[in-house]
Length: 124
Image 1 (tube, one colour):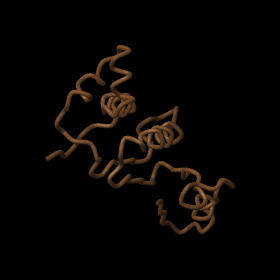
Image 2 (spheres, rainbow, N blue to C red):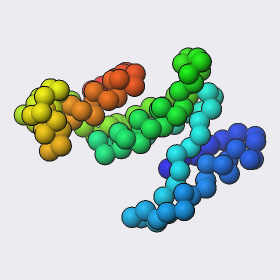
Image 3 (cartoon, one colour):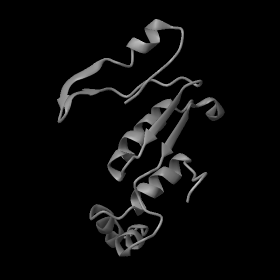
Image 4 (tube, rainbow, N blue to C red):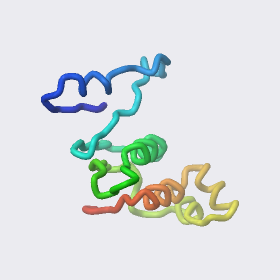
């Protein structure tokens, strides 16, 4: 779900076009085009959403000035702060670590978010 506010009526329609394909729960939507004054929040994202977060972050970052990129926040991500055996193993770059990530370890997802510059700001 993406909402956009503003006075320009044409900017709200550019993000609501579907990609022509159908998803499991209906037509899939394209990712929004964020300007430097926009904000996007992923509410309760899971590890399966990290690809979308990475794609939106890469297309929204301005190559000339990274300080003007929009705010993209993850609110209440659905991975635990406690590591189990798969999480510990998936933090490794080895073949075993990749296998542990495939089985559900969160290490690969956290590494990708770290590389994009995401930081925990408030964690209970």
